[in-house]
Length: 342
Image (tube, rainbow, N blue to C red; front, side, top):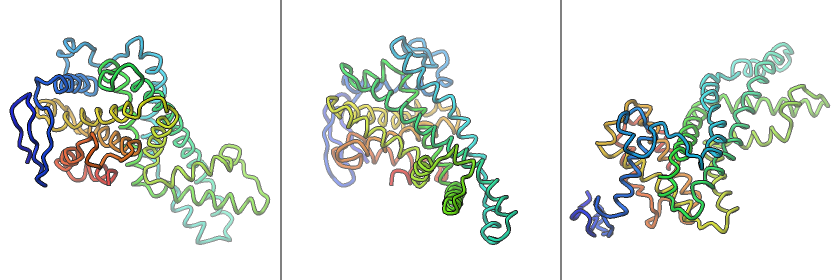
């Protein structure tokens, strides 16, 4: 349990290990008030249906339309995100070619079964290529967003407040990413199909045969796809690499600009989830999952970028609080999210 002192004063927070940390608490501190306002504004932005009629006083319409300064980047990201639902629907409908592959392997001399398996796998590989190419588009989109949300002279909190439409797009990218990876992890057919495809291509190459699909998925593309699908969480790995690349490529930008942006997003999501006033506004289970996925996503990005990670004592992320919020949900709905943090 945490022991809290008077509002707005420096108080001790006593953890169960008996350590004491000092921090400024309460709604009257400038930092606390700024975070409270930001949380409410981003909740309006993330969950507009919960705030109809109240948004006018918040300085932004509930559907978080971009300002003129945001519009160019917002349009670029929006063009990517508009394909995200069809990607997820396509992945969810992915059944694989397991029976055909099994029959072909068990009957290696049956030409008809070999052709049947091959004809079943080829269109699936084209779908897998589409998913992989979308990850590249998402990677570029994230780097553009990070550039907009971390550039001087504004602080991360100021950026998130000024550019709520971009913050919403950042959240939507993370939400998509964790949904994609959850579906991929539950579908072993993806790697089985692709492994069979590569074995067949290699065998035909030895026999000096060229197959038509190689014009669409050449050897270089197949190698990159193989590395992508070998990851347990390929989309999250792509975004983590993109975030690290952004930091390494922008050496004049203090790393705190990026890590503070991520920790602020985490804090906002945690407060949304643990505060009854905000939590009661959630209209569906999917809205709840949206906030949890975003929170977990930014924690993982922070962990990759911060020099000592998200789980150390000096981290600006309240990991115990975040995990507590997740564990308060139905176990089936958060098992994948908790596993992602392990």
